[in-house]
Structure formats: C-alpha cells, structure tokens
Length: 70
Image 1 (cartoon, rainbow, N blue to C red):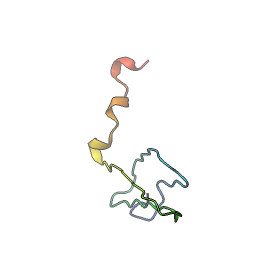
Image 2 (cartoon, rainbow, N blue to C red; image 1 turned 60 degrees about the horizontal axis):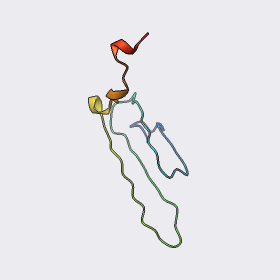
Image 3 (cartoon, rainbow, N blue to C red; image 1 turned 30 degrees about the horizontal axis):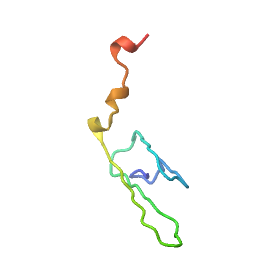
Image 4 (cartoon, helix red, strand yellow; image 1 turned 120 degrees about the vertical axis):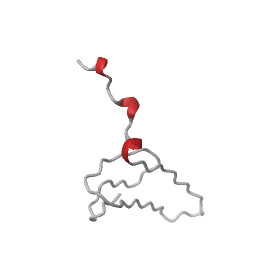
C-alpha cells in the first residue's frame, strides 16, 4: 500500500493469505498493488479485499469497554 505522497505504508512478499490494516496519516488516495509470479502450469488466483475508511474501518468489537479497563 502506497500513500498519496509515495510513502510505503504496507508491504508483504511471498504471502499466501492473511489480513492487514493500517492507519493513514496522509489525506488523499492510497494505492494497493497485488502481483503473482508466473505459474507453470497456469493457475487461477483470486484476490479478495475490503477497503474500509472512516468509522467503518474501526474494529469495534475489539475496542475495550469501560468495565474492562483496570
């Protein structure tokens, strides 16, 4: 993932599956790139992702409740 100013926000190599998240510090459009090495024999690769911003991006179930904090 690259920021609007060309800064690398996230990079992974040789990853078969997983999840990641980041908090942006720069306003603007971010770019995500995916690539697959040449396969012999040819194969189908599926990339699924959900790009969330703002309030929708917050992982609300993991936020501590008032009664859970010591």
